[in-house]
Length: 236
Image (cartoon, rainbow, N blue to C red; front, side):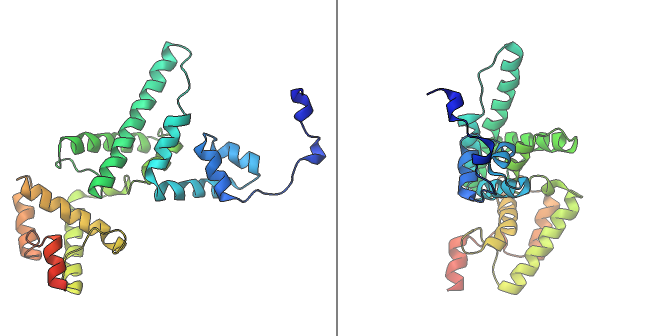
C-alpha cells in the first residue's frame, strides 16, 4: 500500500473538537507540542495548555520525564551540540529542584545546605532570564509546578519576613499550635509551615540572624521548641 492511498479525501476527515483531555495528555507525554495538539484536535490552545499545567502540577516529575524521553534531538553540528547541551543541563537542574521540593516541602533557601545554595542560585538566574523575557514558555510551565518561584522574591525581603512572622503569630493565636506541613490534611498551612521550618533549620545551623531570633522569641515564644510529634500529643 502506497502512502498516498492512506490520505483521506477532505470531506472524509472527522469534524468537530476532540475534547478528550486524556488524549491531549497522551499526545503531550509522547512529545507532541501544545500547538500541534491544538491543530490535530481542533481544540482551544488555552484549554490544552491549562490541562497540561494541571497535570504537571499534580505530577511534577511528569513534565521532566517527557522532556528527557522526547525533546533531545541528535545534534547536527558543533553549535547545535552546545545549544542542546545547555538545555540538557537546564533540565537536569530542574529535575534536581523537583526532587528537592519533594523531599523538603518547599523551594531551596540560600543557607539551607550546599545543594540548596546551588539550586537557589539557579532559580535566581531563571528569575533574571524571566524578567528579561527570554525564558522559554515550556520552562516557565515547568517551574510553575514547583511553587511560587517568581513571587517568592517580589517586594522587600525584610517586609516579607515580618509579614510571615505576623501571619505565624495570628495562626498560633487562633489555633493554639504551629502550622504543619501535611499537604493531605492541612494544605492551606504549607507556606507558613515551610517558612517556620526554615527558621528552625537556620537556627539549628547557627545561621539565623540575631535580630530575627530575637523577634521570633518575642512574638511567638516556643517557636523552636514544638516539634511535630509533641504538637500532636498536646492536641490530643
